[in-house]
Figure 1: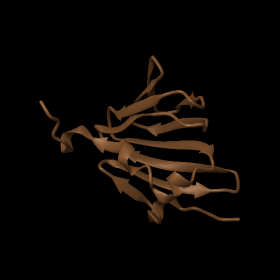
Figure 2: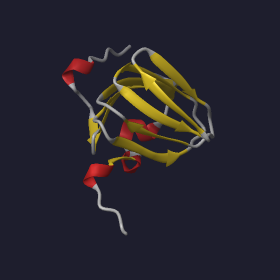
Figure 3: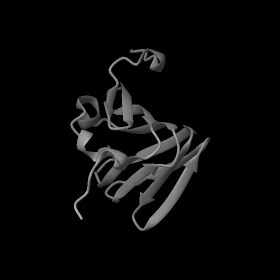
Figure 4: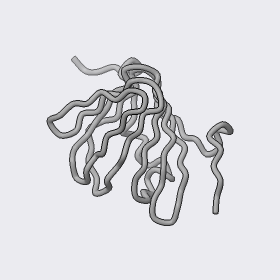
Length: 123
């Protein structure tokens, strides 16, 4: 049994406006996600289902061809193998539950998270 205290910021990874700490179980995990306004997640898909719960803020999620804006006390289920992306429309705190995913624990998916204000794009 392991207790996690999100107030201590232990084992939190931060990538360009996207900050995540994880609670890890045997078969599932939960992420405590803090997003700065403008923080983005690039389009991607995976074999894992996710459930997103917004504690506060405003998080726009593109799921396939649909777009959802989640605010406090709203959730969205992201089915497996469906392309999705996101942008934080305001400073946001969310909780995301999913199957165990080593890339979250090891932060090897850091390249998915960025803030457009910090990047120059080719013309």
